[in-house]
Length: 315
Ligand SMILES: [Zn+2]
Image (cartoon, rainbow, N blue to C red; front, side):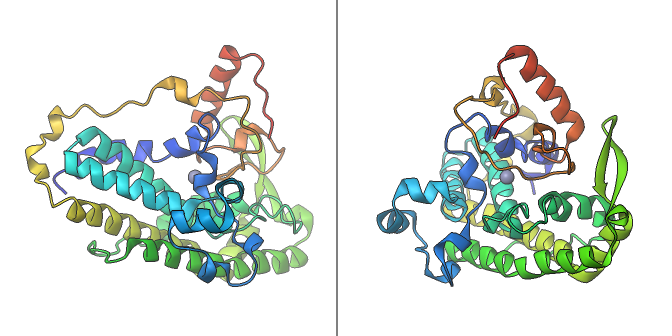
């Protein structure tokens, strides 16, 4: 409380940084998901819990190709422990924000399948529907009080448990959308709303409400799991670092870290970065590969275009 609370604004603003880095930093994109289905049945139980063992079994290139979120999230946690040990306030804030992002992604069912946007099942756009459109409409009704943080004896296991829960939710994520699509005529499934001055096709309120009802609080449940997990991981990192006295780090004197602008300049060699956190459904464009902040992203995109005329929205 003494350390994180004064920096709430920083932590929530910077929680989207890992998504921004995906287009610019090699090795970042695969930290946000794992395609469990490519490993066959019961993958969530069979995959090695430790990175070294997973590498030995599947090879690093292959692992990276299909996403490494369970292992890389744990590495971010370890880095947070080291930052606490050094009492490096800037690193603690930066890594706590990063870790929060990765734990959030892990709790999103669609971050655990290669069919992450319904592209293989005729349900294109479902990613943003589940993780952006539904919270946009219903988050004000969610209950985010999850109680106190707990120390985790075996953090790796908690990561895998969260992935398991998220992965098994996919059945309803896809199944309910499919049955509702059969029940709704196309012109009732979608509607048009203004997004940052652009008229955009979105899932209609009627369709969204029907999906929301069918899911029976699933999005809220996953968000609550995320909040609890983030609190537990931050707290456990602090315990494992020897419970350093953070009240001595005067929050007013801590300069919040500012990541260099240059790391967000798209790297042309990075392609096929999968989109998530979408508001926009059509057309498939860079505009909806954002962090739920279309206004911000449009500005950033214009800036990229100015700086890098060769940069085109591909991938
Ligand atoms: Zn992400």
